[in-house]
Image (cartoon, rainbow, N blue to C red; front, side):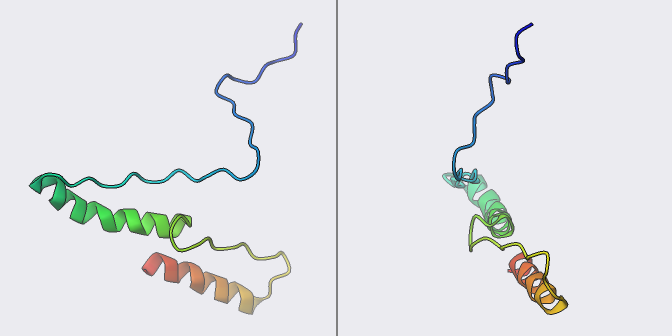
Length: 82
């Protein structure tokens, strides 16, 4: 019996891959502009939380003390509240 093959959709990861981005909002009509005025802030918040916009929140070491945890948690809260 032959060794099992990975599924055809398998793509080996080499190096850093680019994060998928949320597509830009096109507002060519009045309805689209109204919708864009609601969706654009949501898009920006999602990009902030996921690290696409504004930089990535780095993980703490396993040896982090309480002060470092509080500082990191405040950094995450600031990104959410932006």
